[in-house]
Length: 292
Length: 338
Image (cartoon, rainbow over all chains, first blue to last red):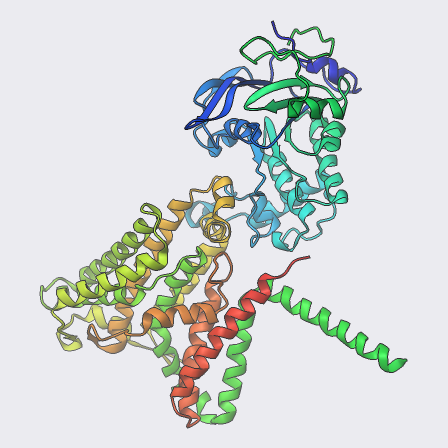
């Protein structure tokens, strides 16, 4: 008896968006993760549909990071399962998740500062030259990678970077974040997860990253956004998953609740009526039909 | 009024020039050592015109071959933010294995050389294993293996030297002369240059090279990008060990005697060459080509100072100053931010 906010009804309000089918792109069922006596996740479930931005908010220690680490393969949950396009998957490492099509931009900004932009975009999945040079001498197709990097950046509207051979450490924080997001977007075939992408950025740079997130979504790419910044979450999110004390304290939309209400749920000042015990089907005040 | 405005204009001008130099060095780390090399060659040839003599330059290059080869391996390790203090000891052990097996156990020359390279590889593997599996800092690991490899070398050879007269031709092949115009090189020098070319290619043109740089630059970012950093590190120590084995072969050809007294300063000298060559001790930055310049700079100072009739202790002094200047320059270059 799911009472989730139906992604389809949310997306219907955005013209030109395909209607979501019943199968979520990414689904987590009853994830549990404990660290000794500390409970990181206590039975958390979520669904992510194509073309939506699902924000995950919560106080420090609410289990946000643990949740996305489980989804991105950095941690393996003790219990529960993860389904990708309705098929059960097990990730033993971030590489497993990446190979399955889930790209994560970690809070720590996983870019190598001394390498140039193109090298960073292709780091860990370099392309070799065609012919014997590539096969026998393992030569990289440096030019090809530079050209496609340039194209990927301009496709995402990151025009501020002129020189693709620029070292990443010479870029501003926003540009670096853009490189990290662009890499995720370029290679994430199914899901892009962004952990606090604007935490270290100024107002203008944050705006660029938010615009990037919207463009990704408009291309049909589902995005999970972890953020502390309520105005930003309410600006880009289609649905908001609120974590509290290792559990899902509610699933709301920017339309159904105000920022103050969201913060109240997050801090425990108010509680949403939560599906008894399992926490898998948090109810919302939104009048969705619950067919998801 | 103009007197006030003009100086500020000057300051701004020099700032942009400084920033431009900073950016240039940032992008091409070998420019710094290359300019120092050119400048020192010019300076020493003014001090004594005989410096540019083809005989002197030939000797200079021959003398640098062993150190430069060791410094190739050292560069790869320092690029991963590691350090190898056991460089010289590993090469000496390999050298004694090559000489002893060939001269005393009558193993064919080529096979003896291969054995030496295998021993070099094993020393590198042990260092890499301890760094990646036991998770010990490279400094500590190689400080320990420095003593271990030195003592094994001494025990194995009983401290006895092996002379060229007792060695098969293959062992001293690296000492054969190769004449190029007025310059007299050795096959050992050619081998050293080939090794530079090969490692430079591997580091700059292959995915493995990118992974080496990324691992040294930011291991966490490299790991999250799907790079198996431990495997990269192990491969670097292993490859460096192979290079140390080859350096042992070049050493035998150069010196004509395999002795545990060779290469006493090589451990630190190789680090000096790498650092003067513009490779950052913090990893991820630098180029093997810079190391070639760095090794040449050390040798040019040695030769130039003695030809200029200055006491050789000033060569040591100059080397010390160069190291500090190089590291200070590296810190400055690393500050590039927009």
